[in-house]
Image (cartoon, rainbow, N blue to C red; front, side, top):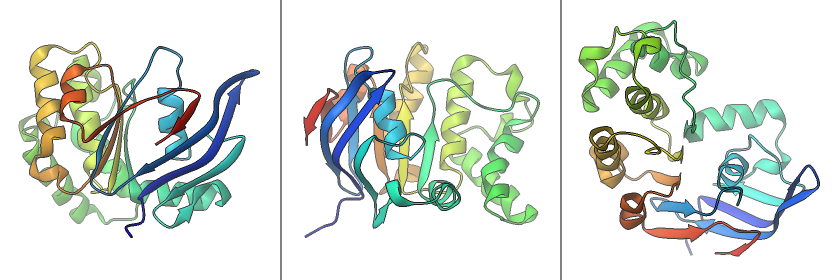
Length: 220
């Protein structure tokens, strides 16, 4: 029997005395594209943050591959997160004073990869995404849509097995949205990755392997 790459077991979570999750059980298999939808305030972003260990549940366990991340020390969790997850936040967190190339280099630098190899990996990633001509642009000069594409590129640069995307097409123009959809559909750079996306975009919902409705009690 295949072991889920992501497993949430009896998760409870509250914030400022408001219950967000009271009995959440969720299993995601390697290679699945999961779209998580729900009303505003239903906990979509909270669920994403729980999966990658940015937030910790009040009770319950979260397994990523063979690791129970609820029991890891902050240092070990940070190291695991850097190896396993590529995260695209809802609001871009690119460093505006750095170029696109330098922004992509940061995760590789933190992973201890030497300078020459870092540059080669960055160039390959930008080339696959059609961004190589923009590599010297400062991130602070990018449009919202361009920033989103670069954020996705940065999330992929370490070739992580799991990508977490928080509303990646929200408020973007159709051309940029279609570029993102093309990536999610399974371009070579996405091969065999597990993708968890919070979204209201019907186009993403239509290409997902599974669509889950985020709510207080989930058993999926």
